Length: 101
View (tube, one colour):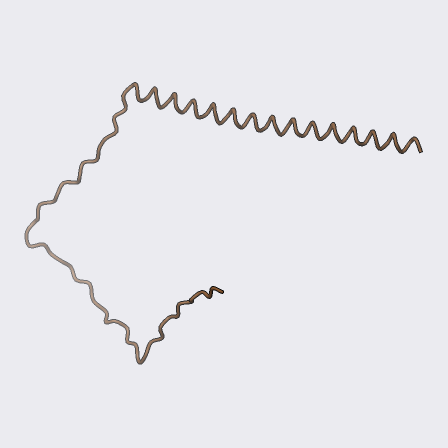
């Protein structure tokens, strides 16, 4: 239905000669040109309020992630205990049925 078009590399036609080797030359400046100053970067200024906000935000993130991980671990533990209890009950029922016959 849909056929992909595969590009083909064009083959060289005729003799291909490598480009000529260019020897590097040194440039000597005739006069010293003025150097443009580097653009000034904006500096980040942290006020005490911003530092407190950053620390509070980081603490909140750590607490939320910790609560999620602990709840997931608890869910896995409860599921494992439930499966173990179900296995014991089923084994007990099978053994009691086997003893009756």
